[in-house]
Amino acid sequence: MARVLVVEDEPNIGSIIVFKLEREGHEVRWERGAAGVRHAAASTQPDLVLLDWSLPDGNPIEVLTALLPIPTVVMTEFRDTAAPPQALAAGARATVEKPFKPTQLARLVTQLTPTAAR
Image (cartoon, one colour):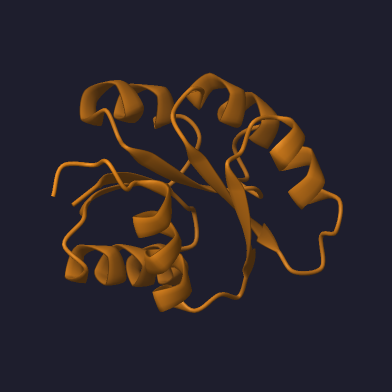
């Protein structure tokens, strides 16, 4: 399946994402903040990144653009109507509003990584 880098600071959300994606057969690395994202991306060479838009330790647009050209899905808060268009304009492949269903996210990962080694 796909190699996925999850960048999420909330432990409950991150652990749910990791659990679901690993259960679907994906290889997952979880970073809890923006500080280690570049190193994690370089060392794991992910097929896809799931990026929390509201990380407390980094500017989301800077993090997103640093990850390009890796396909990135930005996870936004449902009340933040400005984030999805900003994320897409900065190069995100897609956005997902929190709260989301883990199966919805897993399906999106599969859709966006069709050529990942299976």
